[in-house]
Amino acid sequence: MTQMEQGLELMLFGMGSVVIFLSLLVLATLLMSSVVLRFFAEERAAPAATAVANEVPVLAVITAAIHKHRLKHRLRGRRKVD
Figure 1: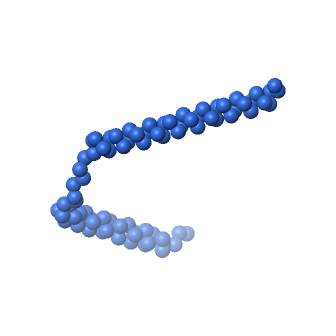
Figure 2: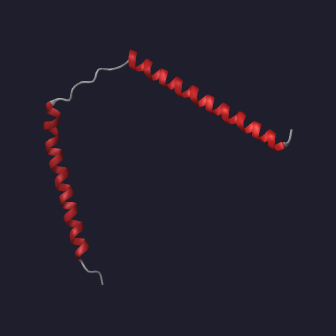
Figure 3: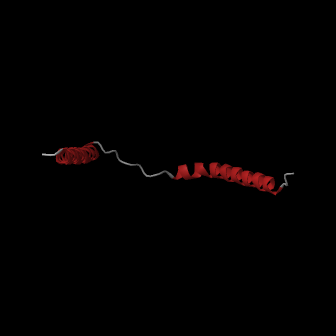
């Protein structure tokens, strides 16, 4: 058996063992995920209407900040640099 054949055999054995290990890892992860979702799943609460009402002032502040930023950079771009 030549060194090339031994190298090829070793490469295939190594790659095959890695594929098998990764496949087992994926299966174990899927199994654990399904067990956790089945037995420990928390019920999701519907978003409250008050959450939307609280976001209105935040949205106004963000909009004003973006507007101010765009105005500032628009004016800076029009200045000529000597």
